[in-house]
Length: 304
Ligand code: DON
Image 1 (tube, rainbow, N blue to C red):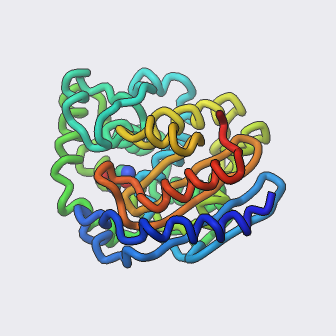
Image 2: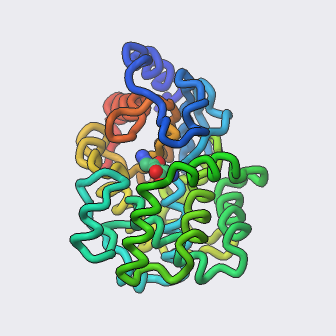
Image 3: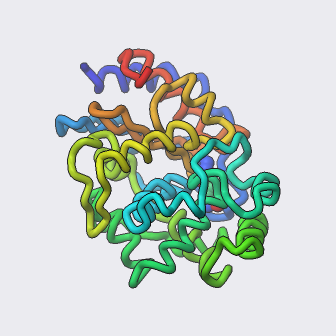
């Protein structure tokens, strides 16, 4: 498959959408990002890498971080994790409060904010040095020792985090947070603030594509069955109330972030990461989704 040629064709074809959507401005630090950036990277399980555009520029991975947090929590707790968080699609926005109240503090899945805030709480309870251990895992799985948090982004999000604070308060009220609310939120925002390039993220997602190979990175060990299940949750919950649309258009397990990144995998073939900061109303990258739709259409490679 000539992925490089396909990436060039895709880039040309998505140009009509270049000015659609807007960057996430509810996190002050993200509002500063140049909306016209674009990068894409495919890493195959055969060891090849194909890039186009600003594939080596780091951006805020935001909710894509939830895949790393889930991996660590599953490795720590195994299936006991599902006593604290569900694994059903929510059909609601990533920061919705309504379902959480109706379901008495039991988040629908680990990828909505409520679920990821519980993941942060679990990591705080179990990791000896949560901040260091979290970033060490990402450095190990991406093979990039310089990947880091952006503490300014994390602080800027905390300053405006009225909804996430409300979610954390509801979780605490229903007994689903062990740690102090402020500490959990601080750690959650720090996880979201990690900056990676498309190339680094693509490398970090390759073990999810290659899910039959041993998954063992800096003490985070998962069985192939656990990795398969993380992929299943990406497929059903990775795009919140647009998970059905992403599945319909693209047909790959994936995870989006409001920094404009999307990471997706084709089991046994490749991982692909795309970055374009302009978002649609559901908080997902417009050109990113379009590029991935064209990728699976052109290659006729999707999981369906
Ligand atoms: O909690 C938030 O709102 C952000 N730190 C992450 C949200 C996000 O990336 C949603 N994804 N599309």
